[in-house]
Each structure stands twice: as C-alpha cells, then as structure tokens.
Amino acid sequence: MGDTQEKSFGISQNAIRKKYKPGKKNPREDLIHQQISDAILEQRLKPGTKLTEESLCDVFGVGRTMIRRVLTRLNYENIVEIRPNRGAIVACPTLEQARQVFGARQIIEEAIIRICVQDHTDNDIAGLKNLLQAERDSLVRNDRTNWIRLTGDFHLEIARISGNDIITRFLKDLISQSSLIIALYGRDDGSLCGSSDHAEIVKAIDRKDEPAAVSLMAAHLDECADSLAMEDKKNGQDLKSIFSGTV
Image: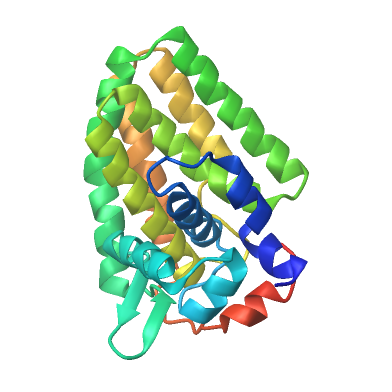
C-alpha cells in the first residue's frame, strides 16, 4: 500500500495499530469507520465513489469481515449504499431526499437551539466563539477540508449544549447526509455554511434572544437548501483514482 492511499483517509496502518491497546471492543473497526465517515463528510470521497472491499482492505490492512461490518454501519447511517451483487458506493441522495434532509434539520435544529438559548453557560459561548475563529482561520488558510468539518461541528456543538445525546447523534447523521447533498448538488466553491451566519446565531444565543436565534437558524438552513443546484451531477469515481493524489 502506498503513502498516498493512507493520506486519503488521513491515517496509516501503523497509527491504527498503535492508537489503541488490545482488549478494547473493535477499536480498529471504530477507527476505520471514523476515517471513512470523515472522508465522506469532508467531501474527499464524492457521491457515487466505489468502495470496493479489496481496496479498503489494502488501505487499512485488515480483512474483508471487518470492512464489511464497517460498510454495513455506514449503510445504516445512510451515507453508503450497498447494492446487491454490485458492491458499495458512497450514497447519492435524490433531490427529494435532499429536501427531506434539510426539512428534518429545520425541525430538529429549531428544538435544539431553543434549549441551547435557555441552558447554555459562559463556557459554552466561549466554545462556540472558538469554533467561529477556527472557521475564519481555515478560510484564511484556504483549508477547505477543515472548514467543511468545522461548519458541521458548529451545529453539533449547539446540539451538545442542548444536552440530548440522542438528538445529537441523529443530527450528526443528518449533517453527514447534508455533506453528501452539498457535494452532489452544491456550488463548486465549497460548503454552503457561512461563518457570518454562525456568528449572528452565537450573538443571539449569548443574549438569550430565543426568537432571534430560532429565526436566524431557520433562515440559515433555508439559505443552504435554496442555494443547492437541484439538478443531477455525475460524480462517480473509482476509489483508487481518489487515492492516487494527496489531500
């Protein structure tokens, strides 16, 4: 396996072996799942990309059984599609699915932000402001991959502040699907999530202005959905071609 393949997922086989001590429950499987999920979330793996078991075994240095379990988990999370007798691909959400995902986010994130406005602490606000600064720093560095991750982290941090772990996990799945939708139907200039919108949301949370926070979040998500180019794009690529370059 070449270095460029390992760089595509941002981790080496040695790192997988050394990061965890033996005896933990499926630590390598969890790490491989995280690496593939991150690659999809950060749009390094595009919708339609073939995820062949052979290539993934080679990349991560594990057997087919573990790769199949990982792909099954990703399929359950709706970011990988397993096609009978044809293998797995990064999922390609339909236009209707795209609308449903953003509709679901509107409902869930309205409830989350209402709780966040009432229950946040000064440390929570400081954490959100740190994320805003990290977003701006990534834009200055033109670090698109990190910026995409941070824009999702912002929404997840608001969910964390709400204190509901089940809702947070559900939102994480929706954000992963949103990243796929943006990769498939979004503009060519990257994520649709803007740090300026995020900054206004944080200000409303900080001053405990619930109506303003709810309105700003709703407008922000509406803008994301409205900015999608709702037409089919062909993004299918072979897995090895993605691994051939550096991230």
